[in-house]
Length: 352
Image 1 (cartoon, rainbow, N blue to C red):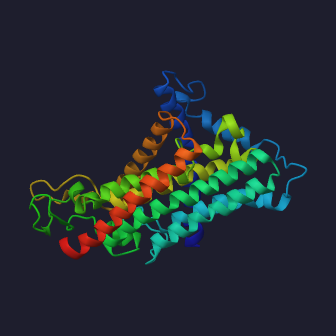
Image 2: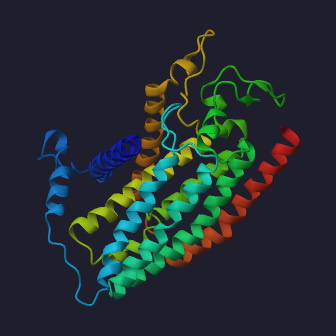
Image 3: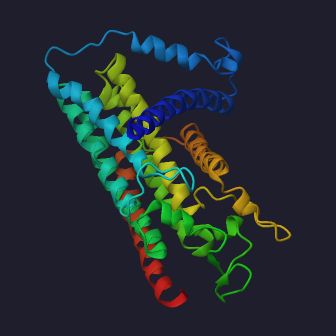
């Protein structure tokens, strides 16, 4: 019974987050482009996205005559399911985690990779040249950028010596080791706050965090890595033939992937559900703010700030060409991520 309650709660959270994320993206893009965005439906246009999703779900479910109907139907389910299952191992607070397994990070990286299979199924089953080209581009991009993302994650894992996301979160708490105030002499940091986060425990992890963030944009097909959905070239990419509920599932999966990758970035590098506030006058503010509800507040706040950054980048930067995208991955991100991995190894052997 508990399993069903948790699953339904997470599904409801993802749906509400996606709806509000679309509204936020419209408002942020309008601000950047000196427009007003949605304003008519509801206060500040808050109900516009709800109206749009109701309209979308009522649209006719069209399946192309020459499409592979079985694969065409299964593809959106597989894409959304692989992304949704990633939420199972994410710690929302010291107490709230659906599955606290020792290989949680490995499970996360493996399960979201299944999305590639669903994207290929969608492009192939549509029997449309634009959809097929979009799926091939997406697969090439995701597989390529999973390499620097995985190496950046390994750089953090070598420091924490754990694949358990909850354990990684605990290691960035008030009693983590830090040399911020001791100039190379490692002592227990009772100051807490942001000084205990992973990027301060091992400063090279800040570079790894940037690499992971860039790679996560590519995995979520976000600008400047939205080549698989290039409207001017491929109409709409691998989901060009989808409508109604199936398109809604693919759309939901994209925004869920944005949240997932942002939350893992926060857990690995930016203190997870720990407060950025330090202890002041020996008052344990970090512990007070790390209760269940404050923990949820802090991790959601940090994650949503990363999501806002993703949206900001989308409406600021132009799209890469395909050759630029691959060159940037293989010639820049992968070598730098390997450098972070080697630094992590020496850091554990020499510094710690």
